[in-house]
Image 1 (tube, rainbow, N blue to C red):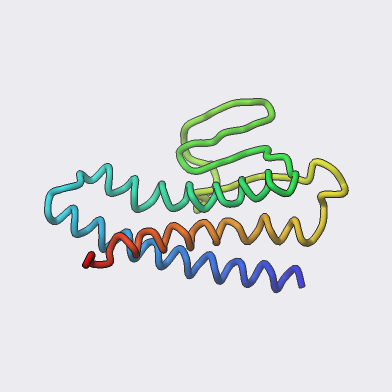
Image 2: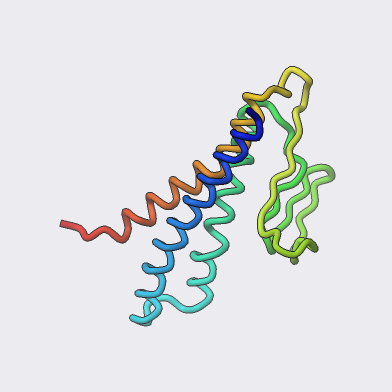
Length: 141
């Protein structure tokens, strides 16, 4: 069951990521071609914000089920909460752009339901961002 939940979470995450990237890509490319948005803002909207929102979904879910968050990482920012330290730079692991390290603060919070909530809320946040991005592309009437 746990493997099924993780697989469904991975599929939802991949689909939401693809939809959000496609919507952000077309919107940002249009603005780049029109000269409205500089390249830095394009990179911020196309890369940093979707990953930040996805990881924030995991972090908020962890807090809502009573888990302790040890690290919140979205390249190039890494926030370690024990001890409190903010660092800038790459993660050191190639391919890792975002990461939330959280553990149950008590044995009563270490359940499959809490683990599933933590796992699925990142993709849900990505889906919400994708919906917002697609709504911005829709023609207004």
